[in-house]
Length: 374
Picture 1 (tube, rainbow, N blue to C red):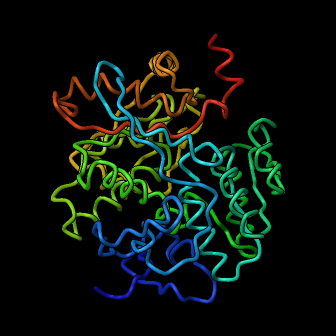
Picture 2 (cartoon, one colour):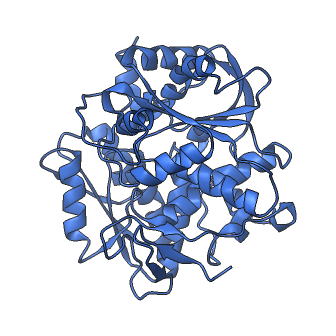
């Protein structure tokens, strides 16, 4: 297998040792890491903290940047009439799974001597990157839409990040970040390929927790796709390593009010097209223009999975069901519970399946929204 490199959609390879860490290809497309060989049980290093026990899976050696991310439990539960295993990723340090990606991405950038980061986010991504930048002694600037509530940016501010509100919608904020990227390292959780090298460690953790087996299915919420792609990359590496013999079905859910990938999947399209969208209670997955749309659609199809859209009232019902069972999650996570009846009806979840439902973010992130449901 050749040396790890970043791959553009046009097939061009970019070496990891370039002077400036690259976040997109010369053709403007998102980059993916070249295929890595994966590891077996003997390659896990239990002396390393949290998810860093799987450091041998990374394309380059990195000093762990650890705040306690990873090693979230896998617990039995019931959602939507199905017996599942629950993975409460909201137990990560800043309250969401994005700590996994931020830890590896920021560790990589710190190793390259990057002194300051720029991120665009209105929620969990900004909080995670602010925390890990602080841990690494790096400056961080977080751009957010001007309509973002102070409650969503206070966590990044507490970690010392400079938060700037940008006029216009979410896309305007992303455009401003790209404009500024000429003068500062753009550490976007949507664009930086090393972020996915962190989210893939979720797959390794599930594999180890199941006694070094793959589940039949993994249920995740879907916005930009870093959970879908993390699972696809991680389990794909395990297949290549001979540690498992098949991919689990990736079952992803989006709010119907903003579901470009669910529409594209249902239409058999290879990329997400333009479409109308409206405000949704599941704000964390309200991504109208996902950067890695082609990669997400291809990954779900390769796994034999499905992408579905769930209505607002179904998401609210999912919040209430999870809360009644003791799981305090933001509405984005609740879309997983809301989608279970669709998966059962379609045969994506079957009697006797060993399926893992990922709860991506804490209800503490959305307390004002949840209060309105009381």
